[in-house]
Image (cartoon, rainbow, N blue to C red; front, side):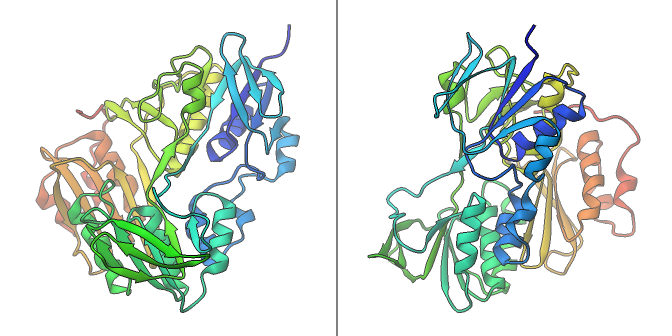
Length: 415
């Protein structure tokens, strides 16, 4: 009998962690890890922070050196694109024409940058930020005194703005929504991030879209829909990502804002699993479907998928967690923003370390910590427990947040 073979398509953070977890769980069969990029699996958060600032080399983002995969008997094949999946024969076809059979298949296909429609990407100075190569090219152009326009006021755009400002550039951010971080945070909390950027000299253009990028061979400026012209030496487009679902869809897997998987990371096609940015998964704790673009999900869902594929099935369900470093401040978020949350502050916004909580019916659904990362684990437990809490207790700085968490198991949240 041929040995079991698990093939992982996508050698990013999710794929790399899944391969690692398969060996850690004692899986003895073959593991093939196939990735399009030339690099070994790496983590992306530092690309918009330390690497972009020039404070750490891109090599430090690698999960393991290439020799580690060989030592673990993981067949890592970089520069390998998978063109198709044949579910009946349980085979994948690579761009090089190779057919590879699998016992189980894990799709960690990730996502790609959302292009700005109409932008001339051939102009020198137009950048996107997704890969190591993107980060290194942009970092080389961040020179003091230059003018940079960042299109998109989400986390990636604001992290680039932070890095550029710290490197001495003149920074403008354009966001077509009326507020920064429109999808990620309630407006009252996002306003605190906005004030941070304004206080550090970042110029914000909110509620206006981009009409065109000017330049012949190199970028010269950005014209906004209201007629404003912003002179620019560099333009960074950070308007979101698109999940790479096409390969799964062509194989017959159900897709809806991501590859649809259950709490065990299983797609609708037998013996095909998926994890990471590309998935829309059912979360037992939140009692609803979500698609997450985060370091936490890329790693932990991949580990859960590997565990489930190796025979130790356990549902994947975690309260979402995300962090961002901007202009010397650490921002951590646990839970998810929802319409109609009541916002309560612990500590004075803008006066240093503080936290914001989003409540519904007296229960915490969201917590955002500014330079108080150590409190996030207590906020997570408070969300998981769904214990009622009063505004007075949340805002009382004399009481410890951990003392508000009941000593009982978490229960699923109401949708």
